[in-house]
Image 1 (cartoon, rainbow, N blue to C red):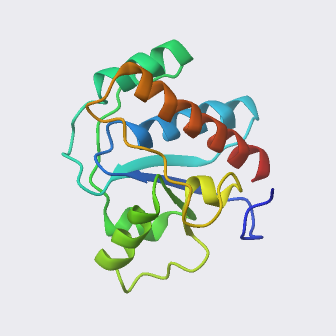
Image 2: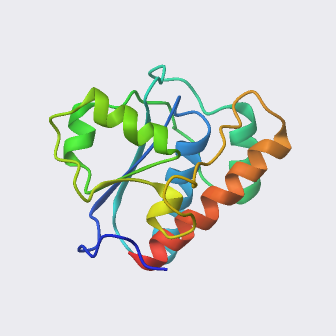
Amino acid sequence: MSSPVASPKPRSLLFICTGNTCRSPLAELYARKFLAEAGREVEVASAGLYAQEGAPMSVNSTLVAAQEGLDYSGFSSTLVSRQQLEQADLILTMTKAHVELLQQRFPDLPWQGKLHPLKEYVGLAAPGSGDISDPYGGTVAQYWAAAWEIKEAVRALIKEN
């Protein structure tokens, strides 16, 4: 399926989750890997709505990243900022609630066409049904389940855009 917005290829991507230690870092790392493989230069970042600045990725996310061959060296969590939101061409969240929270916190930003739940944007879920479960504090299997959903969606994103 194609994305709901027929816009030029994004020059910058921002992935958002809750704490920026599990899902959005994995989305960022997968995007970097797939973009490099495609020979494309796109600025990619991630942030969290309730992130503790400078925290490392969760242990289970680093385990997944290492086994997937993703370079997570130097990663530290970032609390989402107005500047990041203004500068990103495309903002993709892990849940619909993340979209709603961003719109509530920054009601004056021009969101039209640039803020979407990741799985909905790439056509892997119907509107309102594409949340990627938060594995925080869960088992390694829960982290892998989230990682596979993220990987599939990010792969579709890079292929489409």
